[in-house]
Every structure is written in C-alpha cells, then in structure tokens.
Length: 119
Image (cartoon, rainbow, N blue to C red):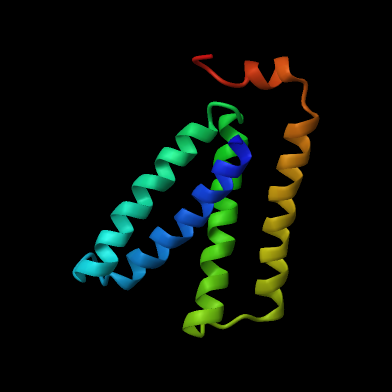
C-alpha cells in the first residue's frame, strides 16, 4: 500500500510541477489552484508513504518518478525536445527507481524499520 501511495504522489508531483509552469508565476487562477491542490495531496501521500518506506528511498523514488513524468508530459503535450540522450537519461532514472524498490523489498524488515524514526 505504501508503494502505491508513493507512486500516486509522484504522479501528483508531476501535476503540480506542470501546473506551476502553466500558472505563469502563480498569476493564472486555474493552474494556481491545481498547483496548490496537487502539491498538498502529493505531500500528504509522500508523508504517508514514509511511514512504511525509508525516507531516503521514498524521497528518491518520489522525486525521480515525478521528474520523469513531468518531462514525459512536456515532451508529449508541449513539444519539448526529446533527443536520444534525454530519453536514455530518463530511462536511467526509471532504472534507478526500480532498483530502489527492489533493494527495499529485499531489505530485512528490522533493518528497514531502523532507517525510520518515530516508529
């Protein structure tokens, strides 16, 4: 459940980042409202996910997946250039996110819990 919430939060990160760009410095009401809603929900989801995923892993996955989704949106819908190197580097980020998930799932539960405070 924590991983699902984390990935939904990463999608919301891409939404708020895109809305921030579309808000033109928070001067357009629609994108500005979307920015604040998506930002809030993304942070709540990230915070929840950190209850079951170590902070370093959760934050790295959240930012990495959110960044890839933001770039993908910009390439597909706004005409941002997508060269071979950009695509390769984005695939590298995706590979790292998957690697963090694999490493986290293989980590003993006691070691994972030791990486979190407040449990």
